[in-house]
Every structure is written in structure tokens, then in C-alpha cells.
Image 1 (cartoon, one colour):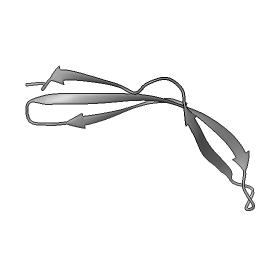
Image 2 (image 1 turned 120 degrees about the vertical axis):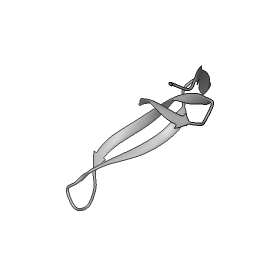
Image 3 (image 1 turned 60 degrees about the horizontal axis):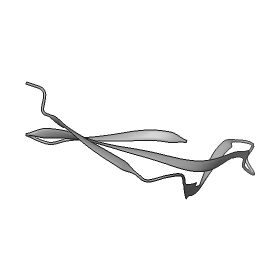
Image 4 (image 1 turned 135 degrees about the vertical axis):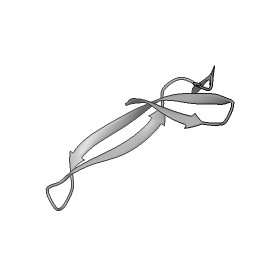
Length: 52
């Protein structure tokens, strides 16, 4: 699983990219569920100036 979380501040936008191992399975109610596991590599944060 590879996802990015963006946080908006007054002066900049910070994007945190995370890569995790995950398992997808059917739960007791026959719905899909995700179980996250260990991280793969380091989390990476980038910063960009705020859009005007």
C-alpha cells in the first residue's frame, strides 16, 4: 500500500508519503477488510509553498 497524506498550512503544504505492507481479506460479515503490516522503507516528507 502506497499513500500520501497532505497537510495544508498557511505558508506551505507538507506531503507525507508512506509505504506499508498490507493484507486484504474477507471478515466475518463477508465484507472486505485491510490489515496493515510492517512499513517498507522510510517515510518521506516534502514541502511546497502554499498556493496563492
